[in-house]
View: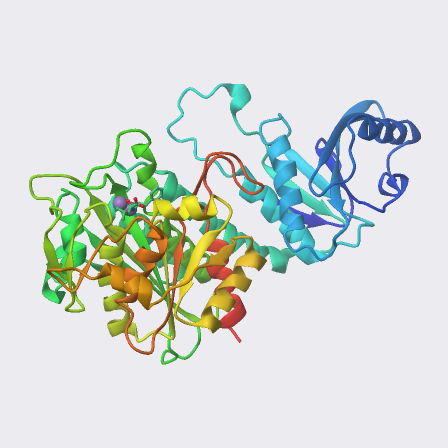
Length: 492
Ligand code: BES
Ligand code: MN
Ligand code: ZN
């Protein structure tokens, strides 16, 4: 999406959007249109029961000289401090126009009191909502193809600085959505690494890749056990961004679950809906996209993103229920259920991350449990943490970014249900509180002094219906959250 900011409406053809607050006089907003056009716009808004609700749209055509123009009145509601409002407005306009035949959208914000920050957010919302991945659709009808190419925001100042920051976020978000959308015959551990390298190295981020031989030398038996049923070998990808200016400043570390396909392994999943498990790498996808956003805007922080990549397949060489594996931490695990694989790969990645980087804080993101969707639906991701301060920082970043989080408990009574008869722990406990059981398992791999949070994003990575900033499909959840978490807490 081409984005620009201007003082006056351009000439030529475009769809014109006029944002209106609840208390505005419509005639004030419509100046610049002639008398007839104003009457038509006002009457058609009324006829469509347009009440200026946030991001509601009334559409009409008005004459301008001897041509006609598509006019969209878009509601702003009444809350000027609603941070999420402006991107929602941009998103709604883009959804309306994306395949409408219009190529250019002009949003005339003059007189609304909006400044550069809000203007940039409208543009961001429009661009984010327009993202699609049509490369495999060779027979898309012309009418179904996107036409909208450009957004111009008028009358809210020159927002180029604000836009630079948000366009970095947009690039990160798009990269995550691409990784999550691609099928598992295209994105597997090695190709995930290559795409991340191509995106991140040119931005000055350092890429380090560990293969299965090094994993074996380090004793990563939990991670290797998951990968051993697949012909695609596992990889541990590390993306480093040293932006703090002080290489010795302790980094913040993000760890993402990157199961590029989760069949369940020998504890195989039912066939119906299994295709969804191509997005079981959504945690790793979010980490890679967030690192892209962070590197693109040259964040003044030391951030490390780790993607733990493997494919969980049933095979003659796959691990079996009942197998006992030894993790890098030295702790042994009885694999009760090979479908509880995310926690196994994360365990070794977390141990390695803590021992290698001595992080200030470590946050993992994972599509870890179906139980998370039962608990929270698709609106919030679950937050689990051993540190109240960190939990609060993440919750705040969640509110500000729109990637919302809701905290769950941890504790000894839960933890002891993960004890095994034959090994130090089992990888699957009772069904009840399944998401907490998984988090509790992960906590056994958090070392003394590490502030840690686990985000179970199983319900938020993929949407079965469009949202305000995404179409059906990959949402890019987590990118805005991590970017905001870094900018609010590590760049001071
Ligand atoms: N990747 C799944 C969790 C998941 C399920 C994410 C549905 C998104 C949608 C995970 O690896 C898994 O299979 N978890 C099991 C754990 C159980 C075996 C203890 C689950 O949730 O059923
Ligand atoms: Mn699984
Ligand atoms: Zn999984």
